[in-house]
Image (tube, rainbow, N blue to C red; front, side, top):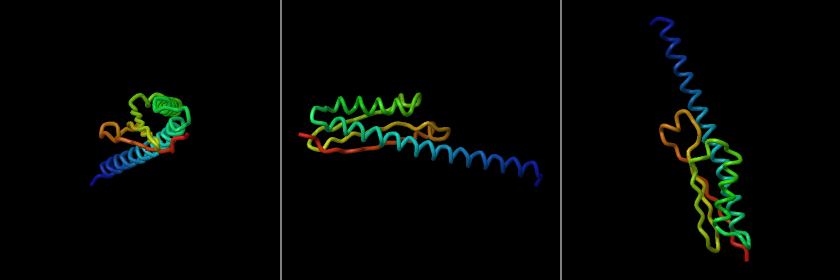
Length: 114
């Protein structure tokens, strides 16, 4: 086999590997951002005078502040009760995960005050 063909396949394999690594890091980073936002939303919603609307607003604001432009397609849900549950979900930025439809979600809970 010709050396240039071997180099071509080697370069393609290297590029694919780097894209997979980039997407894995983007997924992990997105998961961390969503986890922090869900924790903040649960903390705000579980406060004595807090509501689920307040928690959703706090979680959304944290994602928008931290994630920037790719945070437009997130969903934030809140379940009120003795234990407040906030879930933040969305798609991470990425080359491969975007077309393949990867979804990241994080859920945090907090006991309701008062």
